[in-house]
Length: 241
Image (cartoon, rainbow, N blue to C red; front, side, top):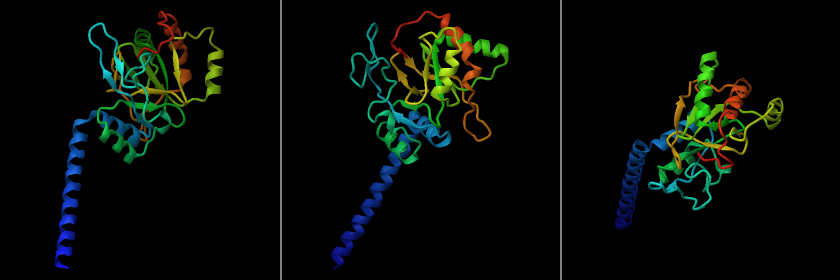
């Protein structure tokens, strides 16, 4: 009996030691993983549903195209899209987000747009920079803006498909270089390394009264975004982050 009790005490002590080691490794991972911090801030503080993205398997050498971990040779957004799990798995659950980025600390952070989460309008970087200058000159408040070397994504309040359709119908022309990320869409959050380079904040989120980032209404920005996109040569149908 003494041997059994001694073995139980040993196993219990060993289990506690392993638990402390796991927690210590987890703490180090949190400290060294800016992507995990980004994911937790978005999910728990802002209530934005996120999911890990497909990281770049190779960033590509000089003159070579970046290779996405999804292994699709025709991937249009290398390093900046959901893969496994799929977009429908996006969540604000802290435990699940912690588990995902503990196992994949460098995984891209993909925001699932629409529903209760922000929507987005994306346009070529040159057009986006001009649009921001126009807004600033007119005193129009702009919310968070995510930039890569090739495109800007302007985050806005959630909008319904019907609302979007009415606003676009009122436009004379909507260039294909202006893209809309609503329900079922996504954008890569800053820190994500895409095939075109790293995503960053062009305009940092500005907290509202509830502590979540303030977002503008789409209709307050649409005319300028359409105008500036129309003045920029279309790069074709590929998303080309």
